[in-house]
Image (cartoon, rainbow, N blue to C red; front, side):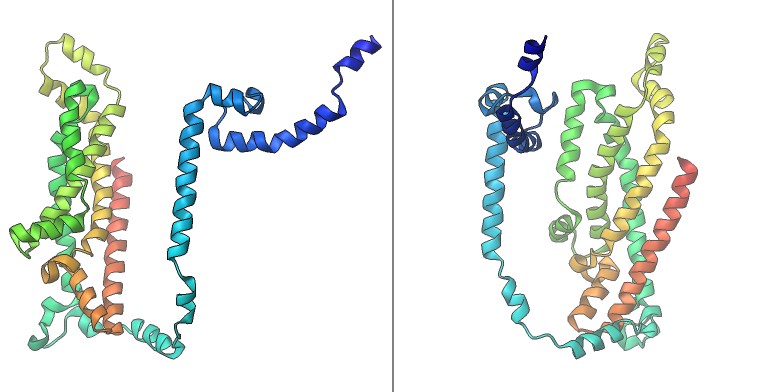
Length: 316
């Protein structure tokens, strides 16, 4: 009994090497994964034979990542940022002007020579909200049939056609779409609405399709037994389940578009809303007007966010 017990006890060397190998096993678990514990692989060779692709792919990605970090580190010269002189007095004056809001400019109490009410922050925030609301409403309704057609539960492999179309129209961000559309429709509010709605259709349609695929559609079998057609099945079994989620997605997209819509003025100029005011005031370094622009944007976003959050809680 004593001899058998002695043979079962690990030697000092085996205990030592087990402690030495433990960090390497943990490193292997971190980079390559192991669902069966740290002792699944006896050595690197057995691990490579078990999962050679994972080793190679991870090693290649690690080398590429380290190479990019080294390249970017050489390209960035941090010393230049510290060599530039800092005028703290000018910075303090700019901050003071920024928080001294020009209320005449905010409400548009300006002379006709300066544009009057239509050049004020309040008016342009209303324009931005109207552009955003119209674009989101268009996307909400037009994305619905595309989302239904992109559902694999409803249309199987045929859904790939609608899915690819949704991917294509959401590939380019709103600002790039606005740049492209200005050559077709000019610098108009229609261009702003079109650029926002096109990208929103792609994003909202994808979310609609995901909501339908995650829904419980067992009731479709009962409707099939009754001899109902495709449209009747969608109307009676699909839409009642997913429509509250559709409304929630639409409100969430409104939150996103109201933020994106503030930047459309950078491209579409005075027809894009508050973004054009912000750009002009930034170029002229009029910090009191920049403060008015920022105040208007923040208040508009907060009000829309509070409204959509309250409405979403009632719907869902």
